[in-house]
Image (cartoon, rainbow, N blue to C red; front, top):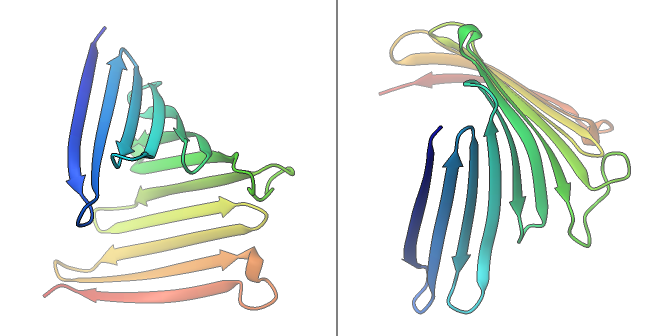
Length: 177
């Protein structure tokens, strides 16, 4: 069983006369990690965030985050399946602000899913999906032809644009000098 506390603080000059003091405190105990980050501009709080992470296994993390200024509660998990070269994350986001739009099930919820797959040393696939009252999804594949040249294709679909142009397709060619 291991436990440690990490404290980080710094002061940052943002404008001519404005300063900001920021601090992060992290406590790790066994498979759990609790963190708090905050910032103050010497007049008022400008940022306060909390995070609790459970390292369920070596490759799976389950977490909850709270952003007190953006009024967001986030519940998610991350899986890193190294033997298959796959990394996947998903999040359910609850917005408790007064004017939060009601997306899923009549609640101010958003669901996000994303990931990456390394098909080979030179080929990578990335995907993401965001579900609110509409669904937006993105897929990109890149392939490295040699040390300097790579090609790719990406596609995007958005149900909010069904009547206009919901689908877009793009191609990439990259050369490193």
